[in-house]
Image 1 (cartoon, rainbow, N blue to C red):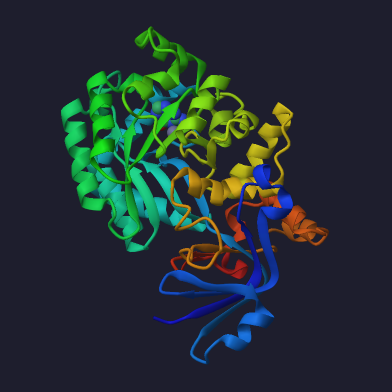
Image 2 (cartoon, helix red, strand yellow):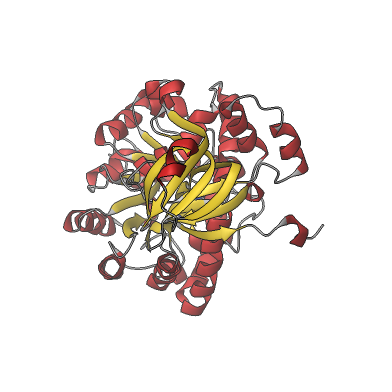
Length: 440
Ligand code: GUN
Ligand code: ZN
């Protein structure tokens, strides 16, 4: 396998700036070289130090001056919601009934699912997302299609079929027994195959019977290394519904906890309306939150309290939550997180944003020993940015004096256009078409 050396402006987060301070949280090598071999990073350093050590056979890729960072990690996204994204006017529960469940009902058709999976994975790569935790529909076919598309490209991806056996239309309903059987069949087929992993995926407490949640907890115990992926405390009407369904539960988190679903591999999307004790229990369990700012704004769900998550040491990653979220771009999504912080009186600096988008996300998905940073031994998933992607970006970035300012401007003005290349396991999987080929 060929060794490749990529020259560029290398930047990676290596720790949480809220814990260690900004200066200790990142590595920046402005004129650097990244060496990759057999899908992994084998060296990283100053170009002047690395270049003389390279054999003549090494393939050199010259991105001098271009920013290179780890790939983005999307900790919460729905694959079967690409055809109803941007649906008007409703908050969570009506939005699910009116738009979401009808769209997901079509994913029992393997041809439809395969076509959508190809689009979905290409869209992830175009936006610089190299790993994701993905909801399928209730149908096993949807997850087969998604894993097939991700596996073809060698992506580190985790997904699961949605478990939903009550309070949903029959076209998207399983049973406790069939949901369990399909989940185990999918995990047997895909979990640990290449870079893929399986997530036990209860839709949310109101859509799952006790029997279904008991089986979900059992499945987590029966396999090694599964994630648990669900929604929690997103919307006020949803929370009231959960309270009506479980009047003796202490709170929403307690409902999942009593079925064995609060673990160190659990990822809870949204968590907007938690109280301090719930954050504390999440932190103690080493569970994670997927913070989905565009979705939380679009559905009018509320403003996530990142400060509380930090206070209790809860792992947090960024979720685009397509199709309630409004962009596949994690870059654009951290820009929205900044604005939510402004509304909450919580400053979100660029180092923390990029931490959430990369290493924080990797930790949330328990994959930080594989991905999330540019370090020797990690899998070579990385991005090459285009600082001239738009006239405004090009103009504004010329005035940036520090890497922090550059990252911040990228997060506020950038989107898919700012991603020039996306690399998966040392192979270029996406290259943006040259501007001359673009219309307009
Ligand atoms: N809660 C249950 N299902 C969903 C979903 O598909 N999207 C969001 N945002 N919240 C949910
Ligand atoms: Zn969601």
